[in-house]
Length: 63
Image (tube, rainbow, N blue to C red):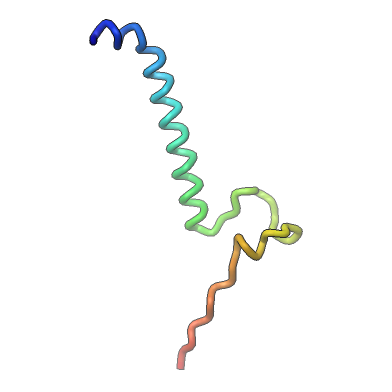
């Protein structure tokens, strides 16, 4: 078992780094989505899907 680990150490390390990078990107996208930031980086004025991304919040009735 130890010999197999030593033979494949480079593959294991590279795979672990790639998994960590993908997890960091996904976490960043989730945080941005929760904060209401756009992922495309451009304005929503000319976007055909702006209504789907930024739905208006229903107003609460207060008396």
